[in-house]
Amino acid sequence: MAAIHAPVNVYITVIVIKCCQMSCTSEAFAIVAYGFKHVMYNTMIKGLCKFGNNDTPIALLRLMNERGCKHDVMTHNTVIDSLCKEKMVDDALKLFNEMILHKGILPCKNAHELFNDMQVHNQIPPDACTYKIVLEGLCNNHQVDEALYLFCLMGENKLDLDIVVYNILIDGASKCGKPDIAKALFCDLSVQGLHCNVWTYNVMVNGFCREGLVREAKELFLKMEERGCPPDCVTYNVLLQGLLKNGQHDTIEMLLEKMDEQSFMVDASTLSVLLDHISSRSLNVSVLKLIGKLVLNEGKEAPCIKSI
Image (cartoon, rainbow, N blue to C red; front, side):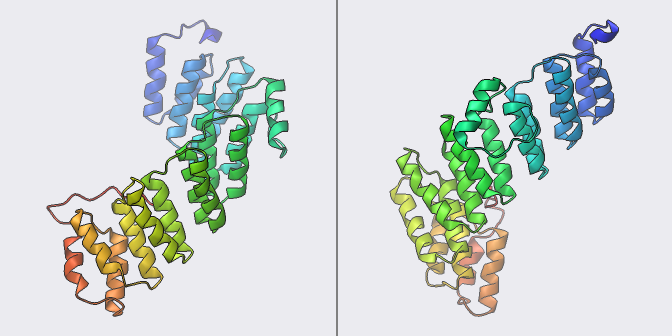
């Protein structure tokens, strides 16, 4: 508010925050335009992104540049995350590259050239969180090759390649019909000293089933317990659906019995597939009694099953 000689005090701050919370972002933007500092710009950007307004936050970043108000990596992360969620991946990548050079869209370069440019221009280096946001956005939009390129950049920059990064890439490769890449990343985990979590196994089991590799899916399922990562409710549901869709019925009843022993439930999509196979007589009608124990009732809580 320096432009009109008005102090940026707690009252003005509260007004801007309330405007954002009430979706009155135009009014909040008008106040900020008079001369807020770093913290208030971040508040505005978060509020705008929350309501899916992605053009104005980018304009605010430009305004911060013009006024010499330095924005940090968290500011960029907020906008990039919002862009990816809205499937505006090209815009997210453009902003990602601007973090490095502030020159718009960066031509494709190898890792060494890219990070040399980062050092020369001394701009905001993206952190591990930024990379994860962009990786997930690329994978969700079937741009796995670009995601793998960024993955290599992370390694070159000695950023933390944790299990979350690998899970994002394994999941993306599996969904894009690239099982060989998914398996290579999965095998690389032990080399890097990383331990698979249940989400990693669930993604791999699902990927194997999707490609018709039922034997590999069953083998990995059995190894989970041996490796100290027992299957959860999601694992059982994923494997059941994979077996049924690939016409493998010999172990269905055994899996259902194990689910009953551990008080797991079948989710709606698994139940639908089971009933379809019973009606087509691919499965014996006798399993209906067992299935009845595994559906939601008053004595059980619905499991939190994340889509794979």
